[in-house]
Image (cartoon, rainbow, N blue to C red; front, side):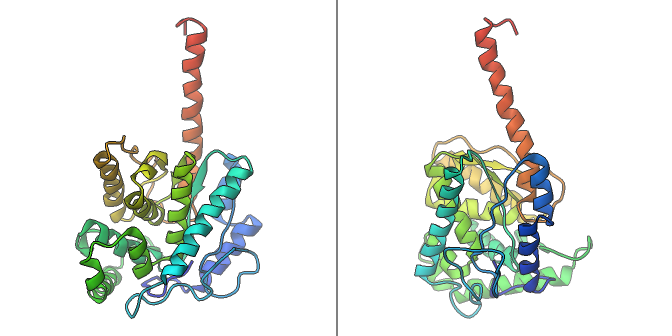
Length: 296
């Protein structure tokens, strides 16, 4: 999905190109999924313009609104997007899948994600804002300063709501994004059905955090695939772990991989899938040990 306010180095039409590449098997996630035996499902919830390659039960055809001027979405839009995310999980389970890897594609979503993190943790933007997707390895400090200023402006714009201890759904309504909201719905549904979820980097982890603030039991289905290059990601993971501890639940483990990924598309979660699968296979040895009378 695409956001209404963005500091991205890329234009919004890039999202459509990536979605098409995902559909025809040429995107990074498609290649990796084929190698590890993962099926790819693409859901368009807010890509600007028509995407004939991808269908969806509901989408914001123009992306989210500019949260510097107004709320990014209406209450009705948030609820519909949550249901789209839940429905996608139901569809996957109906096809016999017993593990999910969630990812995203979109322009402007690190800005919305940083806003959500700042709000939930009550921390200054300087602590969690990074460069997002960029065209080179070099960090553009001016771009980060601009993003911080944009986030501070948005926080001032919505200060009245933020003082009233808003729910997770209220924050999504304020800041978006559409894909984050659908992901929140997916996490809630996976938790209800006790289906494990491999979590991709920063944006997907933010969705997991919002879902965990709505229902702490969400923390029990999470496996973080990769440590994002975005500095706010570790704050987000720690916050999710703290939600679990506060609810007297076991905290999810640290991310399985750390490679400085910035690709998105769920690639980090897909790369970690064989690790989770092999860990499950190792547990079969416990059963074998019992069968053979502790002789192995």
